[in-house]
Picture 1 (tube, rainbow, N blue to C red):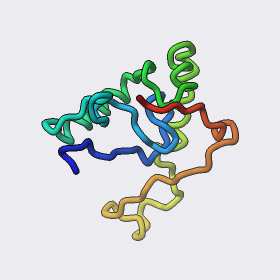
Picture 2: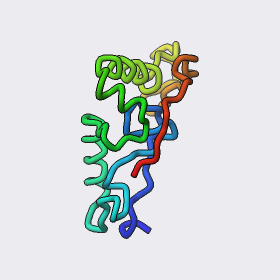
Picture 3: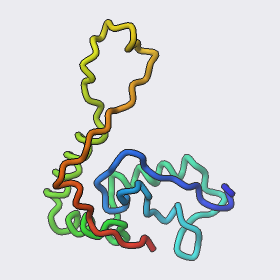
Picture 4: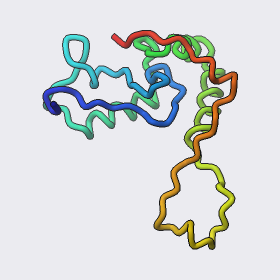
Length: 133
């Protein structure tokens, strides 16, 4: 239904962010129809991706999907930053696979997806969600 409805977008990589839930759904006005959202057919994918990039850099704690993370961002930012950094290291940084660089099975033409490790027990306690309005 695009461009008459906003595109359906979500993150596959877990992200510790007040506006992104554990399923990867994004709470952003540009991805919602009016009256609650700001989507209009004149917006394009490039504009939406740029606005999501800005949201990643500057979370909106006043319209969160993850209430606990939002509160942490507002009132305990150093803890938020440390947890976000740890999640990035655990989920978004490709780890050394132990394969030798000269191994023909791992040539530069082949893309090796990042390995997904199990989340520690402390991180499995999911922060409280709330509907994005």
